[in-house]
Amino acid sequence: MARRWLVPGGLGFIGSAFVRLVLREHPGVAVTVLDAMTYAANAANVAEVAADPRYRFVKGDIADAAAVDDAVGDGVEAIVNFAAETHVDRSILDPEAFIRTDVVGTHVLLEAVRRHGIARFLHVSTDEVYGDVEHGASTESDSVRPRSPYAASKAGGDLLVLAYFATFGTPVLITRGSNTYGPFQYPEKLIPLFVTNLLEGTQVPVYGDGLQVRDWLYVDDHARGIAHVLEHGACGDVYNLGGGNSRTNLEITKELVRLTGRDWDASVRHVTDRAGHDRRYALDASKARALGWSPRVDFANGLAETVEWYRAREEWWRPIKSGEFRDYYRRQYALR
Image (cartoon, rainbow, N blue to C red; front, side, top):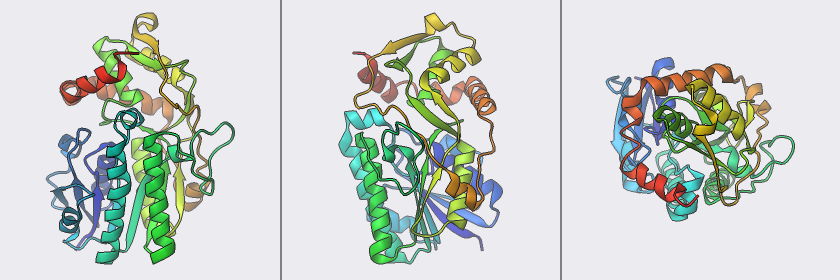
């Protein structure tokens, strides 16, 4: 029988990439996805593997212990937690939702690990917990200094995970990834928002001067890194998964305008910057590289392929950019 991994948040962007990767490259593993089906979840993200007999779906919230127990009930040996509220802008509009999922939900999962004797729990986190990095790159031993409600909720979950290891010996691992891009990303984040706006012929909103620096990691490389840490990492440890592709938001915008064939002056507008916007993130991923992982996808190629995916898959993103998304976009940008 296949080993079974539980993947909370497996219908989201990085979670679904992980599910597809595991079912494609790990024939001895079965996957149960637990997902609350909030706005950013999409069953179409796993359509290519949904008929695989090793795939199972359970609808449920990670903050609901009964739902978690139902998902674990078929002999899960590992939990890989992607379930989270993730967008900084939304955390500024509604911090409470982030605390419930990212902190309370993480606690419920940790208790399930203890209750069911699960062998490994990997918590997927973010470079944003380190806060603004003026110089150099963040290492796993650096203090967390979150500056947004999103980053604070993720840091809270991280600290809880590490506390369970110290207090109870719970077999936990944490990965902290840099900004991730690629197919199937909900179009509220910079790259999919800008690509789809440009393809629609509408302007893209560049925050402030656009010189904020982010490190970029292709989604399949991120998913592969998480799987590698799950199987080879040391319990109680944190592993940074950095792409090594630092760019300013303005550089990204210029490349997306070029790849979509749009006119810069007609397509770009600078808007009021995000409150408390971190200027720079950077990760030192040498620990994960020493473990045997490294990114495979060249950034220029990955970005071009991502643009072409959105160009070819309008049936995926156009329905998303209506309804709830349109209301969010209006609230977020109308006064900017």
